[in-house]
Length: 451
Image (cartoon, rainbow, N blue to C red; front, side, top):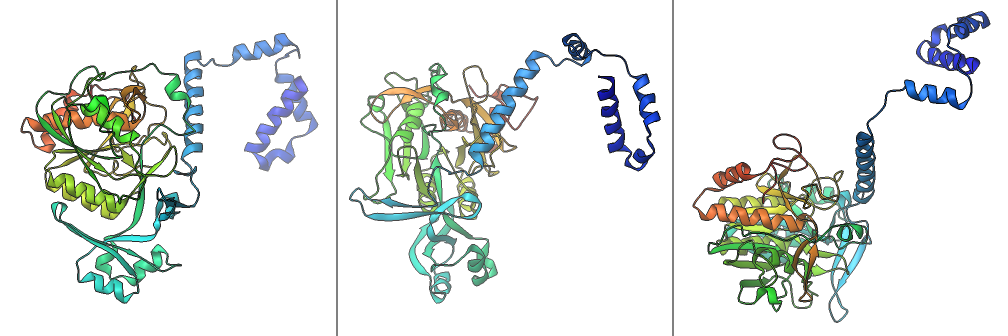
């Protein structure tokens, strides 16, 4: 054992002082051995060594193991934000005809194949036509102060190629027709979260005033008993041939205005619901950028003070300009932070400065295991195993930052109803928030918990 320890010491010395290693002789090695304590090579000797080592408290070890497991799962699941989808998928109509093709683009995001959206005037369309691009639509979105053209490039055009073809003034106004996702927990990777949690409920109204609020989501199952005698104005932005999912929007609407077995956050609200999502598969829905822009414009036109967007996706300069346009017209936007895990990159629109980003906690005020984290998180709210309406006309638990976002949206709408400006209303929410985690604003819980 002494010989082994002396060799170990020699190896350390060699790594630190390689230049003097050649001067160490057998005599020097024997000198080192003579200075080492005698430790028998038996169990008692090993226990002796263990006792001399500093002990880490068991609570700390448990937390380290928990953090490592969570990080490992999060990194694994967030390396490709949409790993469960093929690189190219065809969205088919209910009659089986292809009506839209999604493709993987830069940074693993998704977009409509070869489609782009440009903030432009009618005169700019001439430039696009001269470049032999296919003009698909031109929309004047007056409520958010912008006009956009949607066009398609020939096969083989990259983002770099396209930017080189356009004048400098148009390059920063260009974005792919990106695809955004509804933040649902109903994914194969997350089966355990719902089973391990008890069912939680909204316990009180955010306020009882007559109020307007908007959502951009899937369609809502209007025949659900939770929405009997509830004022919901629903507008569909997809063509009739798309298969329209309803579960996610029904759940979000249930939290905001649902009755029967539910305690609505806003029992006297008038809900304006923009339906923008099409069905991809059992677990996933998609919404194109162009439909999000139209939905934001419509809701601002309806003068709703707050829009809840329980959806996430990539950064896009056109979407950012639309959100700025809504803010200038006194419409605040609250968005889900995302369910891709603490190691995931920021999700949008939540990560934009003009948007209030919301994360989810459980009934013990512990962070939802799949919640995104980052400097852009503003508030946290109950969003784990929370009872709400389902599209099959039943009631049941749903989890995710999507389920937490409506709570903050409702409280903000109530604050604005008092006549506060957006800035003052947000400051009031900060004062109401229960600080969790690190003191002050932190990347896990934001300013704190809104209840």
